[in-house]
Amino acid sequence: MKALALIAGFLLFLMPSLVSGKQRRGLDLILYLPFDGAQGKTAKDLSRFRNHAKLEGKVDWREGKFGKALYFCRELVCGREPGLVRTPQHERFAFEKGEEITLMAWIYVDPANVGGKLVGARAIIYNRPRDTQANYGLRMDRVDPSFFYRDNEDVDFHRVTGIWDAIPLDKWVHIAATSTFGNPDAMKIYLDGKPQRTNMKGGTKPDDWSLGDGTKPPMVTEGPVTIGGYGKFLDPFQGLIDEVMIWKGTFTEEEIQEIMLAPGSEFLGVEPRDRLATTWATLKQSP
Image 1: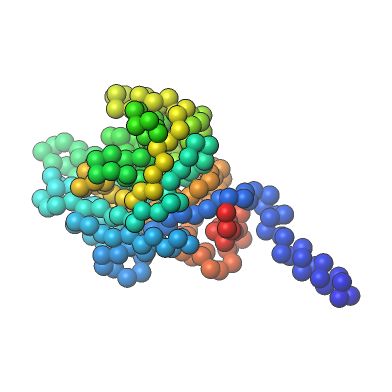
Image 2: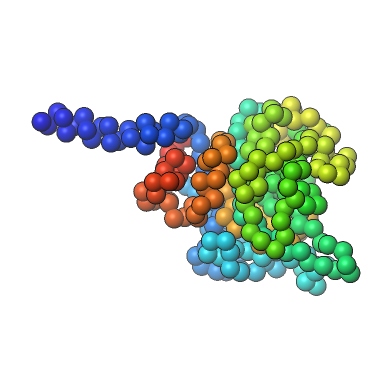
């Protein structure tokens, strides 16, 4: 009887992996900024690395998709200095060729109109090794979402842009990018959990700032990571950003749709709800 109890306990221990069949070793949440809790000049990182970020310039706390969010505004629109959020440098923000990455956030694009011209949003999540250059990031190119990285020779940017659906204005939308550095076929963009048709040339109106083909290794840098802009408030976002995540590892379409259902903070340190067990059980795994 005692032996049967031990076996039953062992099977219960294994159950999450046996049921889901999807958990992958090495999947690691390296940055999670829910923008909740105390409101001030610090945004807490709820990943195990605790790289708490600082608010710089003019950034406002507003109601978000889940709890609070941060509002970023361009000088042209608000008549004031823009702002951003900046983490410390950390070794886990560095990626090498063959490593997988997922970046995601909820965004609400404010269609601010100045002189009849739409002021677009730009930077969402950037890894910024130098003041005016970024290593990898998730951004908007006009109305199209894109993921990019700089190669290790500092020669070209490698960019993939979603060209299926424009990012909606005046509503919350979930944006995600997954990639394996050095593999152009693995560079994918998702809007509200739906994969987008993509273009390596830069969206519906191609330009020439990114000439790479996605095959080169990335520049290996430790950040810091900035949200809503980079450098000295360059390429500022226009609108709200919430639930920022960076993962080492990639997710399937189904898993991204699961993550969208609730804030990640609801599942940290507790048993995940049944419908989210597949994805959120990985939060407790060490790489």
